[in-house]
Image (cartoon, rainbow, N blue to C red; front, top):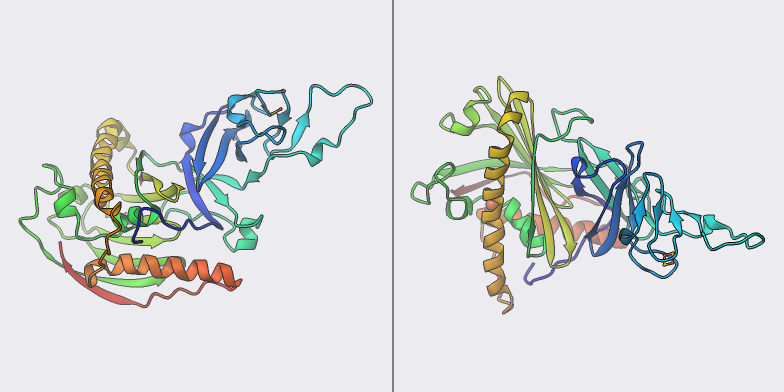
Amino acid sequence: MQGLTAEIIKGLWYVALPGRDLKAGAMTAKTLLGEPMLFGRTASGEVFALRDACPHRGIPLRYGTFDGTSVQCCYHGWRFDKTGTCVEIPSLREGQQMDLSKICTPSYPCVESQGLVWVFVPRAGETPAEAGYPAPPLMPDFDAGEAPRFHCMLPFHCSMDHAAFGLMDPTHAAYVHTSWWFKKGAKKLRPKEKVFAPSELGWSMVRHELPPQNIAYKILGTPVTTEISYMLPGLRIENIRGSKMQATGLTAITPVNEGETEVHQFFWVSAGWLSAAKPLVEHLMRVFLDQDRVVVIRQREGLVHDPKLMLINDADTQARWWMRVKDAFVKAQADGKPFENPIQPMTLRWRS
Ligand code: FES
Ligand SMILES: [Fe+2]
């Protein structure tokens, strides 16, 4: 975690993009985890992900065209289906048959769930089931077909470790997220005490009641309870339940490479009338996320000099847990053993 770059974890599901950004018959290219990927949605609605490189001469397939069934390379017109298998080589003449099924660009397991396109990035050709993670996680309280009502994504000029620390940093909000509508400043820090417990790929801040003075949550109908889960490969899922409605927030960090990260924020809410406020809500989400983005750009000015960094007691315990969970996961992968969560139940105390 010390430097500008961080080790990327493979063998897990990552958020690639919101499903609504990928129309039927369209494709879009993204580099994720250092790999060039081409995402597409067939005319019949299925999403897919291919390595964005033509096996003939390596040119990115994104420069070609997609007819809703196959991607045609821009260079010599070879066509590839959604599994990445070659289905046509226009230059072949009679008597020049080739086994096209042996020609392919690699494909990535790719699924759409709850309105998100997830991609599985294997370590060495392993399937998600072989890796032990057959499907991406489900957001609590919402159906598999239910898309998030709100989304914003900003590219962060930092490694996935420093982006992850931001997800689980309980004491920066009073200094970084200062707005008239959120926190006015760090004048009134309150003592906090929260119970944490290990979960499948990380840990949770155990469900607890929010303070009644929390205005944002009053629309949910008091009492309001919340549970926040943090898990590899960089997901923070906050599930808020009120007497009138439920909301689930997902912050997902997806590394572009070892030193760049995409940070997505999604919200599912049970109240349909909130859709009318979408432009305002997504604007406020962007303002909030941009405050985190700016702080890591400033942090970068210091990190280029490779300073020794500190993680202090309770306030930074979750950052330490992130490194421990990540290291344990990578070691278990290398040893070919099941991951054992090193986190123990604990109560943490801080002022924020
Ligand atoms: S480089 Fe793609 S078809 Fe030749
Ligand atoms: Fe933040």
